[in-house]
Image 1 (spheres, rainbow, N blue to C red):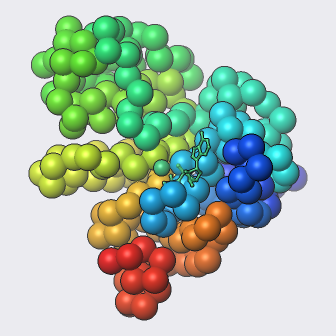
Image 2: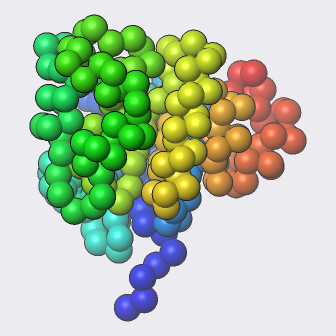
Length: 235
Ligand SMILES: Nc1ncnc2c1ncn2[C@@H]1O[C@H](COP(=O)(O)OP(=O)(O)O)[C@@H](O)[C@H]1O
Ligand SMILES: [Mg+2]
């Protein structure tokens, strides 16, 4: 069977918290080596969708395929071993572990990401090599969260609002880093609230409202549709 053009395929996912039906039949595809951005207001289900793909919040219905293999029946750690790394919302670092220890724990063979390459890519982290998680600035924490995902040598990255809470200058820096990662050929699925940032970096956009996909298409189509932007994104 020929390898399909998409690396990730989500089919009709339904996810609940108790009785609340949060994701109401979401389907999406991430093409290989492309960046797909998920946009939507606060609380529409972006994080729930990313967690559903990783089976951290298991869907009650639907299927997920990664590299043409069905993965929704696997556990989260098995899914990450298949080659998907999640950069969670809010970074989720360990307060008392150093930069180096975070990288040592997360490191996995299988690609060219190792400590040296990480420090070449993120020189700021090398300067902070012995700093603990709670001694890093917001930007440094985000870089470490991304570095930790990369050093596992995944073939795909899932990022949940990587620029959340960062000052404009740092947003720019993280944007440049993600662009560089993308240029290395990574497939990326990213939830984002910053419209400009998403439209600049993404190859494909999905807009979610109330747990459903209400738009999918090219960034240019979003950019010129002011009404849709206002209605679904509130800007
Ligand atoms: N652990 C949880 N238990 C119950 N409800 C939750 C939980 N996490 C999120 N929710 C609710 O699910 C909805 C979607 O949340 P979330 O996926 O975090 O949205 P987003 O990431 O788009 O801001 C929201 O209404 C939120 O309040
Ligand atoms: Mg979220």
